[in-house]
Amino acid sequence: MIKTEQLSLARQLDMVFKELEEELSGLSSGTVFVQIRNNAIGKFGIRHNPLEGRNGELRSADSGLSPVQYSSFRIMALESLKYKRHWTHGEISYEFAVRQGMIVVDATLESNYNMANLMIRYPRHTYPDPLTEIF
Image (cartoon, rainbow, N blue to C red; front, side, top):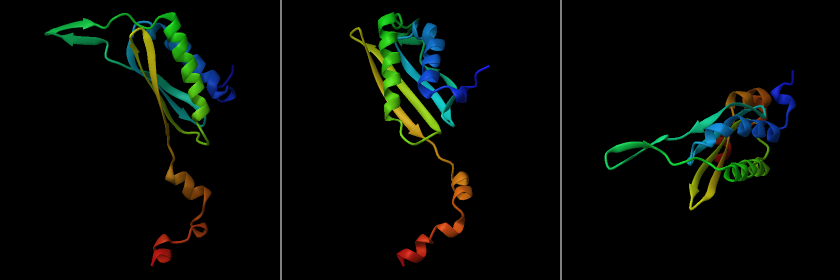
């Protein structure tokens, strides 16, 4: 059995989009998110509002992504990985909407760091006291 850490992040993201394909085919807007830890995707999913309210009535949203829109979305998501630099923990969010028949995607890359890890990696004696250097 292959472990996630043995796959590139791009391959993992491609697998995420394959898993979400059916759900995306029913949505015309929302946010796809992937949480990354040690360059491996753990949690992923879609945040969306499946119902719209107008004139006091609730109804389901219009049809979802077409196969062409889905393919464009997946390619844009994979291309966005080129902008991820030097971090191994964080989250990537892809906010998407269909406007005038075209899919629009905004990607947000968020890196996360843990101060406890820094304290282990860099013992206290390697950092000068910033207060004594200022005054």
